[in-house]
Image (cartoon, rainbow, N blue to C red):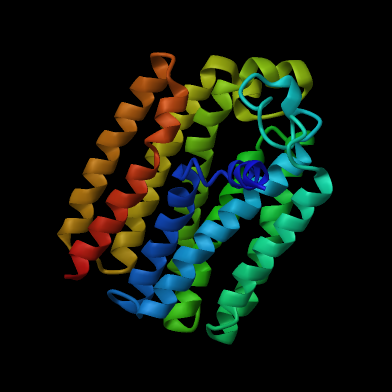
Length: 280
């Protein structure tokens, strides 16, 4: 039983929490902006727990979709589904349980949040399969991760203002950036087995893409700051985010794209700090 529990933990990537932060920070941006400050404790708990549960569910369904590919990729060949520690039926059952737990938490919030949450499940389940037919699966990942933005506003403000979609776009672009770094790690294996990504399509030119998208994301975040009337600390935070983007690009150019991916979540934390400080 101990071995099975360990396999489930690794299947959900609970031993690698960077993905949880990448889901959580945009949710916190929306919660603080929607509430005009710190949200109530229960709503905050639901979103933190939901980030853990839905990121875990996303990892499970991703590995289920990739169960025939992962054994042929050096980085993923030891994953629980790839090496037979967990069966496909067990993975689907775990995915269902995680989604139900997350939905049970959302049911304690208002009706608008419940309705918006249905889209999150659809996007989380769809993303892993997009790698078969498009070079831009990260756009679907971004759409799923960014879904926390309208949900956060719905939970705190009761509705989703038009300005929230600027923030949504920024999060979607952010996913294209950090997941392109991630895709660079597996580029050779992905070419061999037929998995698509921007790194496969563009080769080394993918760094031009990530650099351009970093600029676009910063413009969107500046625009969002103006729409939400945020004070100067927020813009100081964006300067720090720009510096982090430069560092990530340098790491990727030096052949360390995975390290660039691992530190990407600090940009989300910095934006959140800027929002909190601007509202103080």
